[in-house]
Every structure is written in C-alpha cells, then in structure tokens.
Length: 518
Image 1 (cartoon, one colour):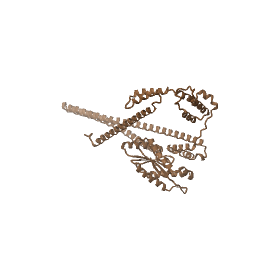
Image 2: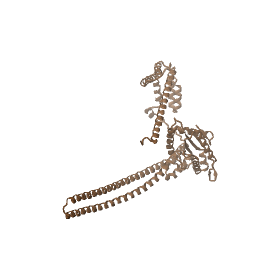
Image 3: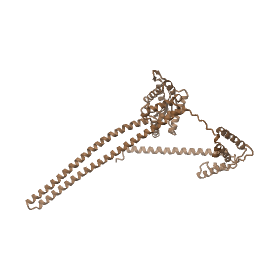
Image 4: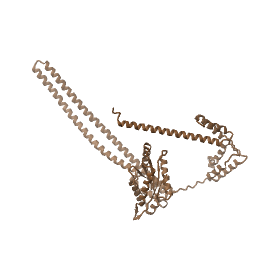
C-alpha cells in the first residue's frame, strides 16, 4: 500500500506531463519538417518553370522532375532524376549566343590582383566571346579558368623569381582588444596577477607602450606557458593528494576488517565456551542419575568444575587479548579518521580557492565567462522545462578607453570594480551578473520578460549615471549602455547572445547612455 502515496501520484503526474511535452515537441518538429519539405518542393517547381524553354535537352528532365515532386516523391527516383539532370548540365554545350561570362570575368579580375593573371583572364574572355573559340562545354571553360587562377607546380617554380610576398598589415589595436577579451575570460592564478596586469596595461594602449608590440606578444606567450605549467603542477599535486587519500581509505578498510574479524572471533569463542559448559553440566546430570556411590559423584563434580574453570580462565585470557587488540585497532582507526578529516578540510579549502579563481574575475569579484557559460546552460534548461521567460542584458561602460587614457588604468580598474558592485547590489537574488571581458558585463534575468527587464535596466543605468566616481580627487563621469533581448524557442546560446549584443551595438550607435531591446 505504500506505493500508492501522494508522492508517487505526483511523480506519475510529472512523468505524464513530461511525456506529453515530448510528444508535443515531436509533433512540432515533424510539422516543421513537413512545412520545410513543402516549401522546398514549391521552390523546385517554380525554379523548373522559370528555367523551362532555355535548353531543349533539359526541358524533358525538368518536366519529369516537376511532375514527380508535386505531391509526394520517392527518394530513390528523385536521386536518379537529379543525377540525370546534373550529368545533362555538365555536358551541356555552350551556346555562344547565350553565353554571358563577362560578369564572371569582371569578378575574377577584381578578385585576383596579379597582373599576369588579370591579362590571362582578359585574353580568355576575348577567346570565349570570339566566333573561333574551341570551348564548347562549361566544364572546359572552368578548367581554363582554373589553370590561370591555380597554376601548377611547374608554373609556380618557373615564376618563383618574380613572386613578391604581399605585405600584411595588422591592426595592433584590434589584436590587442581581442587579447584583452581573452584575458578577461582567463582564470589567472594569484602568483601571476602582477605580470598579467602589466601586459594588460600594455595592450590597452599598444601604440604608446614602452615595449614593442612583438615584445608584448612574446611576453604574453611566455606568461601563458608559465600559467599552463603552473596549472599542470597543481594538477599533479592534487592527483598525488587524492592518491594519498585513497591509500588512507585503504588502510582504514584494513583496520575495520581486522576489528570486525576480532569481534567475530570473540563472539565465536564465547559461544564455544557456553556450549562446552552446557555439555559438561548435562553429562554431570546424567551421571548423577546413574551413579551409585556418593564419593564417585563428588569426584565427577569436582572434575567437571575443574574443567569448566580451566576453560573459563582460558577464554577470559583470550578475550582480554582480543579486547586489547580491538581497543588498539579502534584507537588507530580514530587517529586515522582524525587525520583524514583534517586533510579533507584542507583539500576542501584549497579546492574552494581554486574553484573561485577558475570561475570568478579577480578584479571585480564577479563570476567570469566560464561561470556565465555554465549558468546560461542551466537557465536555458529551466526555460525549456517550466516555460518561464528569460532575458539577457549586456552592459558596456561608455568611453572606457578615454577614462583609462585621461585618469590612468588604476582609475579604470576602480570604475570597473565600483560599476560591478553597483550592478551586483542592485539585482535580485535570482539574477546572475558576470564580467564577460574588458568593460563588458552580462546579466541573466530568469522569470523576467523584456518589458520588466527594460524597466530594471533603466533604473540601473540611471543609478550608475548619478553615482559619483572619483580618482585622485577628480570626478570621473561614468555612463553605461545596455542591450536586451528575450529568449525564444528557436534560440541557441549563440543566437541569444548575438541578438543582445546587436541591441547593445544599437545603443552605442544611437548616442550611448541608453538601453535598447531587440
């Protein structure tokens, strides 16, 4: 009867709802697939109608293809028809009066800047347009083009003396911004914070740094390698510690096993003694009934008592030894447990520090991009399970580079920390705010539609605008822009973020210090 409880009824109802939701989702997917298939058939039919009459060789194939897919179609037959169509197109003769390759050649000339290639392409164009051309098939035309734009190894070697390597111009500001975003997502151990901050400062303004950009990149690579080696060393330490814990647990298991064995042996010995005493007393009772002489009975009783006393003494001595052994094992077990508990607490504290460094930004204390990625997965799963609204807000401090250039990087760090504190203190417990990188923050607002989210964002934006930030006794004006979007059924993690980022871009381009929604 315990199975038919309220809890099991609720569990059954949950599974029933889950099944119905999955069934509805499957129906929606199937319906979408049917709609896409229908649209694809309509597109092929319309395309065949448009191209009909352009070539007498293709017309019969197009008509058969169109008739075949009007309602339903057999996949094998469709593949065969498409193969026939493909072969016909490949071997279709080039009609000079219909050949319009000028646009193709104009594109190729703009695409390939080499003067020799451009001259060869123009010569080929003249040949195609001439009456005496020997190019009668489309495949031949593209083979000739391929010979020009992709020369053979022999052609490359013969022209190697004339080849001039193109000069590649790299925008170091763009590269620096990308590297700064990478730094924002990277969990940097405390021992490397100082060199990392120096590299960040160099990347913030690479054109005015005392170091060459190549030197900055070299130092960055060296730092990343050191961080990697440090992480591997820490991992080895953790593996060794876990092995030590495993050995400790194995020793505990041995002690417990020996203690149980000693206890079982003591119980068996006591049972054996009880059985022996009972047997001897029973025999003494039988002898008492059969005996005819009082002296004989007295002798038998004395002999029985001596035997029982000897057995009790031997059992008592053995029991004392077992008891001492048991106490020693228990004392060793307690000491091992205390040692293991201390080591476990130390490991827990170390893992907590490592986890915090891996998932939190060192400057602002906010969760970093790694934590954001995991939280986003959780919130999307919750959205799909409970069908509750989910909104994303991306924040970006306006003119942050100017703040660094005017007031210094320490002032910029202070603005980041204070802004992060304002965003965190002004959000609800259920909301999630992380530093995404640089001066950009991402906020997830579960169970919040776009209308309510916009109101919350506007309140936050006004609060930050009116908050005083000071550096070296000077007021630092700070405004912030925000882009918001609400999650929809067809969204992915990337499309959700990209739409919010697009809204932020709109807020930046329309004057900053505002919130925009898409």
